[in-house]
Length: 116
Image (cartoon, rainbow, N blue to C red; front, side, top):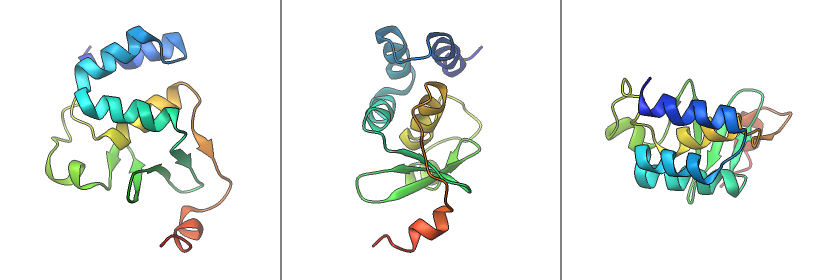
């Protein structure tokens, strides 16, 4: 079991972000883990009919199948290494495990039309 799988199993078992789980996430993922936890706490993980989206500081990022549309994922991370995930993908993984995803019964494409 990789260290990434370890915190995920711990989070599945706890059902919530305990101090021990937070410590494991941040030990494996560093500042990306911290930002992911903040996004979950601030309810910025949104699920639509077609995509799961994380609201960032300046844009929204689509996360599907563990990948993300952000530049960090595109240029800095190894997609085959489970310890290398952007904070958006980590936020989705965390939020899904603790039932903290904000669900919207609409298509993201409909919402995206109204964003600046």
